[in-house]
Length: 300
Image (cartoon, rainbow, N blue to C red):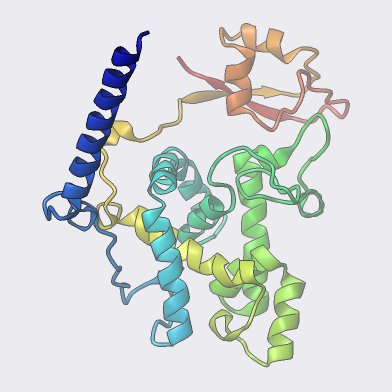
């Protein structure tokens, strides 16, 4: 490339750069194109009737109002996460709602399960697993089978029954569903010790660890946003939401040598069977005790 061509090329680049620079900065003064005209982050008005299982949030207390406002803002403006939770709630709430009713737990506790696991099968860094995020010790204490072969923390029906037992026991001990929810996070002993030391009887009057300080407020914020999605700016159609495939139940009281082969007998894949029975942790079911298990088979 000769010298004159190089100069022309540099001049062309300079002209284009100046054009775009001027265009960008010209928009700074154009009210039609400025950010504050096209995108608004609005302060939220806290509803007066916020509650957990009918127990009112005392918003007249300034620190309570701030903490509630924080969780409502976070769960409103973390839009991608919020929309995913709304979609998953549509998938799993129809399973949870009758189970909560059956085991005598207020319907609001479906939002506790959502806050715990976000309805995804991932084990926490502390080792909590399943929809209700039970630790191994707690799960075993309440009768769940947990080993390398079977982990009933991932069984929605059985883990919901255990969660109900735990929460009802905590409610009886502390006298409120709000404190029962806090105890689910911090443990019965941890909550009892702090209430006694601080000489208080309410979750809203106690100074608790940071995670527990936010825990109940997050549950209530999720309840408010998911119950009123349009109010908080979430726009979707019914077909955008997730749904759970229908299943039928097969009862098994023997060992299964190969679950992939077992799945094929029903015209489904290993993956399809495991998606509906994540409590099966290996490609076999040992079942030396001849226990009766219920395996869900997706209906196509």
